[in-house]
Amino acid sequence: MKPFSDFRSDTVTRPTEEMRRAMMEAEVGDDVLGDDPTVQKLEELAASIMGKEAGLFVPSGTMGNSIAVKMWTRELEEVIVEEKSHIYNMESTHLTFISRVTPRPLPSRRGAMDPELVRRHVRLPSVHTPRTSLICLENTHNNWGGAVLPLENFVAIRKIADEFGLKVHLDGARIFNASQASGVPVKEYAKYCDSVMFCLSKGLSSPVGSMLVSDRLTIDYARRLRKALGGGLRQVGVLAACGLISLTKMVDRLKDDHTRARRLAQAIYDLPGITLNPEEVETNIIIFYFNHPRLSIPELVNRLKEKGVLCLAVFGGVRLVTHKDVDDEDVDRAIRAFREILAT
Ligand code: TLP
Image (cartoon, rainbow, N blue to C red; front, side, top):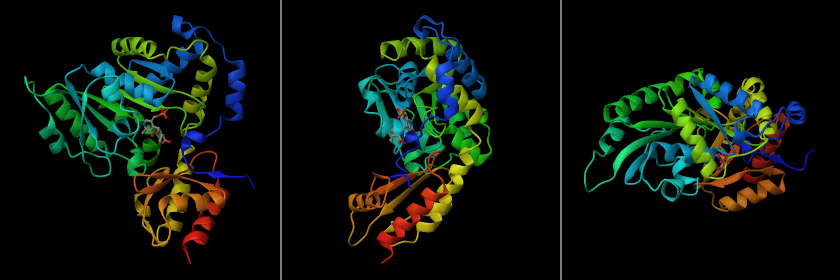
């Protein structure tokens, strides 16, 4: 048996054999000078899958989101974000640090902000207040346990954005998980957004990389911002080669991750201390709240680790993520470990 079954994140996925071969064989050039053919192929493919004019390869999802916020905003402006969103909570404050805008966090129902609430929080130009310029959405929603945002929410938010002349950016780190779970094509979600960031390096198993897509002029500007942030890379076709495999070969299998997450959730939701609705596990992320008379959250995480099961403590709870590198045996091992620790 392997030493650990690693449920900490889908970011831990290792590149496939095919990716390793593709890295060896990739045709490369200097991408900062604009002549890496493999990167160009990936950027074109990403844009066409999302129904946008152009794409940009970026080293990380955080850099993609940072560039997106920067390209749609100026100082003295405000950005509407969902209160548990990754952009607001987990990207080292780039809204204030890089873009120098104020975030306006709003509550939601499992990641979907009420359009009327959004409308009430749009600030019109005034000498006193920041002007709202951008709304950020996240699908799937990480801190809401991989929740899928309903398409109607995109439609309603777009309507408000158009009413007030705002831009909409989608943190679609796991947009392919959303699409696999809902049956809604990724293009359909993207249609209601001015830009989309999505990750190659999570469930899609590339070692590094995310994509930012939008219209051509905006991506030209994003390319300059990427350089300014130190994200201009040279013979990066070796990584883009993996990205091409992510997009062409790794999407369909995401539904297996969803099935495993649901099975794990169904097996542990009623153990003492755990608050979890397995019906709400829609994709590959399980987050449960934990309140136990004898065990704290860090103690539970440690006890699981002693039994070879890795997971993360988050927001008053525990997170487990399924992905390519955990199979049914890993899920069985996790179920056994939870039962041994909690079912006394
Ligand atoms: N999320 C990571 C960590 O930050 C916790 C994870 O393990 O889930 N948007 C969303 C919704 C994300 O979940 C993440 C990464 C990002 C953006 C940022 O991507 P990276 O890690 O490539 O900067």
